Image (cartoon, rainbow over all chains, first blue to last red; front, side, top):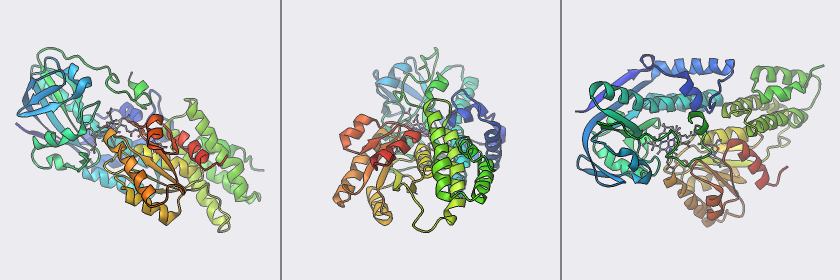
Length: 224
Length: 212
Ligand code: B12
């Protein structure tokens, strides 16, 4: 069963801390003036943006340390993600987007030349796109009496981004208005795809940065 | 007398209105635009850059400073004689074909612009041909390539080949950056420089052009 949600930002419990981290503040807080600008930008975005996400649950078979079968499709997740999927029985596949209205808003900001506001809006858009995984995980925990895994996305941590094509073939055409480019990226830009595993026992969870070798990442120390 | 030294701190802390006001006062006292740039504005950018290196300033602080710098430059430019306006150089920047991640690239562009380069930002999903055309049209001295995907970073080599094919390789320096890219990759594909952040990118751009 395909589930689809459209949510206004006002209805979301958006964490300011997540926005600050997305902007690169690590564990610090911006100065008053910047906070004011973040608040007013968020207000503008709230007026035009609707976060959309879509998901469905499918049976899963573990084929090897690296490969799983979702429905009729085999996905090769790689050696990094594979070990965290022990005990997976079902998978919730999702796509999510901050929408084309957001892309347009950001495009206009770019033209205005206000680089600080553009950066803030860009960072808020990232938070909006990434929010769905936790919303969906909450819904899953409520609806199924099962444990949920961390979210994993095609392209992340050794999972070949080319598998986006197979991934999208499992959804209706243009889910939530998202299209896939020749290089397997999604439009609108602020979109994500991924899955969350479901099983009876708790999943092994990677500590936030365990799977990624980007030692210079601006998020690294903030979340560790 | 205006305490023009404060301009350095206003730029470094991104205090746009304060910076503009003090800039106007300094101008009214007869200090030339070029002196203001050299003595205060660039020093302000160097100060925030230093703080960033020391972990005392964050990415948004760099941007705030670049924004204040740009606002001041917008006031000064019309006052300077055509031709006397010094830019450190012209560069073309873009995220390579197939890639859409551009937050970091835009930061690099803003910092370079704030620090006195003329920047042509081609956006995302930029082909080798588009880079070459922009270099020709703008007589650019540097091409900056950004990629955030391991798949698209390989396209950087394509861009370099296109630049070579057009006979431009001796005329432009090439700089690369983005999360999956590192010095080793930069050496492998034979570019002139790599940096891991927007602040270093400015230092690097000056280095490849032998400024400073
Ligand atoms: C923000 C982000 C997003 C955002 C928004 C992107 C956007 N354009 O708006 C969202 C959430 C939408 C997103 C989605 C996806 N993303 Co993403 N994303 C990131 C993330 C977390 C940060 C990128 C960023 O903005 N960093 C902040 C800036 C300031 O840093 P930066 O880009 O590194 O730039 C600095 C330096 O690198 C350098 N620099 C950059 N360019 C240049 C150029 C030159 C010339 C120089 C000198 C220096 C330089 O200076 C910059 C400033 O200091 C990275 C992980 C990471 N830490 O890099 C993943 C990452 C890039 N994403 C990844 C992936 C796979 C995706 C998705 C495909 C996942 C999915 N299936 O949903 C999607 C694709 C989206 C789409 N539309 O198709 C992977 C790529 C893997 C790979 N190596 O191939 C990464 C690395 C995550 C990971 N851990 O694996 N993403």
